[in-house]
Image (tube, rainbow, N blue to C red; front, side, top):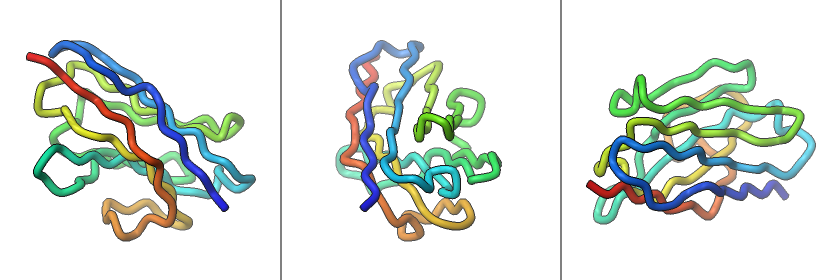
Length: 122
């Protein structure tokens, strides 16, 4: 059983930064593609950013230039550095893992974390 545990969410003022972490149990982390999704109140969950097992990345247009995803395979952890945060970034952020290639499709992911709240005040 693969478990994902997010941390690092919180309240920050607009223009500030946060770093989210997602710790993944299991021995095959390095073979997973990892994604971050978010869901704002009253909205559907959306893809934010992902990183493939080979290190390739994909970003939603809304976060390009502000968010950076990285992974540390030795620590079974993926990170999301969020800079220049905006009130519209307020959402619950979810980490997800999948075997195979990176995808932006939510239903392509096999495992999900419980989510961490990010609130950006104006």
